[in-house]
Image (cartoon, rainbow, N blue to C red; front, side, top):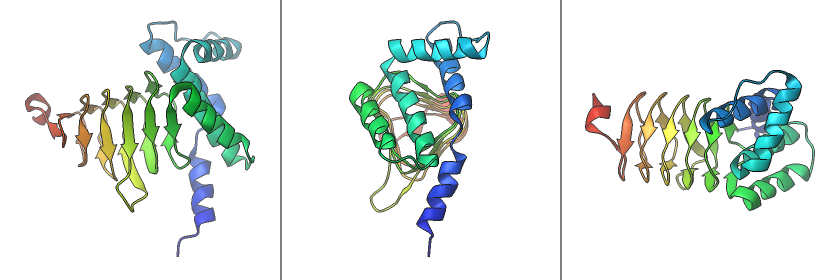
Length: 197
């Protein structure tokens, strides 16, 4: 029998700390926006985080997800739900409690859903209207390795692994593993001719 409390404690212990995750997220967000992404000091990093939260709804929602995860790890009641609801209201971003996102992920705009036992590596780029979801009756979600690009409207369904550096085309529906470096398109997603070699 699975000890659910132990499982949640172990999962929450793996979430990166705010002081690590927020600056990494801000750095990659600023870089992709063509802005200054090298921070001169801790105070400069805080200023850039606040500026990005002001100008980018998606970054603000991502910061709220980070706050939610940290508050849950600390056992704080109510506030994690409030952070989650705010992220949904501000940018239509819904990142479930068991989702683990490494520092340095870029969410281009809002309209992003991820739920289940999902892991997203650093350097991942998530376009709008992306869903990383589950198959009915299974809480295992996808593992998205580092430096993956997920195109607008793509769906990644079930306990698949998307290898490092892979590219998922717009509106692709990924239901099988994607090898590292491959480019997949279509529904169901298949490697392109140049991504297959």
